[in-house]
Amino acid sequence: HRDLIGISSLERHEILYLLAEAEQYVAFNRQAAKHSEQLAGLTIINAFFENSTRTLLSFEIAGKRLGADVVNMYAAQSSVKKGETLIDTAVTLNAMRADAIVIRHGSSGAVGLIANSVDCPVLNAGDGQHEHPTQALLDALALRHKLRERGHDAEDFTGMTVTICGDILHSRVARSNILCLQALGATVRLCAPPALMPAGIERMGAVPFHDFDAALDGSDVVMMLRLQNERMDGQFIPSPREYRHLYGLTPERLALARDDAIVMHPGPMNRGVEIDSTVADLKDRSIITSQVEMGVAIRMACLDVLTRKARGVPGWGEGEWV
Ligand code: CP
Image (cartoon, rainbow, N blue to C red):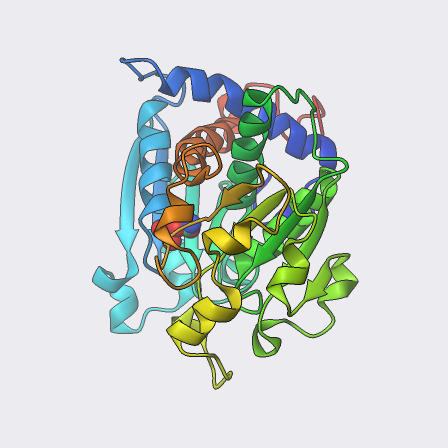
C-alpha cells in the first residue's frame, strides 16, 4: 500500500489525479442525499494528538459518506496521557485491524514513523512543522474552482503568483503549499517577519519577503496564515496590533495585489490580526469557506484511492496511474 505523508512524495500527475478524483465528490457532496457504500466494511481510525476542527471533522465526514466505520481517538482522552509511546499506540491501532489511519501529531516526522509500524495506509493530517498534504490539495482544488468560476479553464496555475503570508517558520500548511503550488506551475512568494521566516527557505524555490506591500504587488492569490503561538520558542513576534499593522490583510493592503486577487486562509483565523473581517468575508474574492467544502471532497478522494489496493480496485500503487 501507499501512504500520504507529504506532497513531497507525490509526482505532479499524482496531484492532478487526486484533484480530478475529488471533483466527483464535490458534485456528490452537493446532493441532498450523500451516502455511498464504497468503503463499506472498512474501519478508519482518526488519531488526533493535536486539536482540530476542520481536518478531523472533514476526515470523519469523508469516511462516513463513503460508508466506512469511522472512529476517532483524541490523544487528550487516550492512554497517551498515561505514558504510552507513540509506537505502542500505533501498534495498538494496527492490532484493531484498521484499514486506514489518519494522524495529526505535534512532532514533525511522527506520522511517517507511525506509517512504518502499521500494515494499512496512513494519511498525514498535519505533523508538526513538516507537512499537511490534504490541506495543500484542498487549497489547490478550491483555487481551481474559483478560477473556473471566472472562466479560466486551466488545469494548473502556470503564470500565477501566490503570496503566502504569516508564520512561515512553523507552518506545515506553507510547506505543503509551496510544494503543491510549484508542482502546479505557480510562483510562490513567502512573507513573514524575519523571526518567522525559516533560514534557507529560498532553496525550496520560493521567494522570501519581509515587506508585505512589496510581496503583494503583482500577486494573483494571497494566502494568509495565523501566528502559531503554541509553537513559538522564544522568537520575537510583534504584538497583535503591531502584527496587523505590518502583516495584516486589510482592504487597503489587498488593493496592492492584482485586481480581483483571490484571498485564502486555511483556518482557524484570528480575525483582526492576520486578516480583517471585511477581507475574510469578501464575497467575490475570499474562498475560505470553499476551502472547507473542498476539504471533504479531497479527503474522500484520498481515502478512496489509498484503500483501493485493500479493496482490490486498481489505483494507487497498482501501476494504473503511478
Ligand atoms: N486548516 C486546518 O488544519 O484546520 P484545523 O486545525 O481546524 O484542522
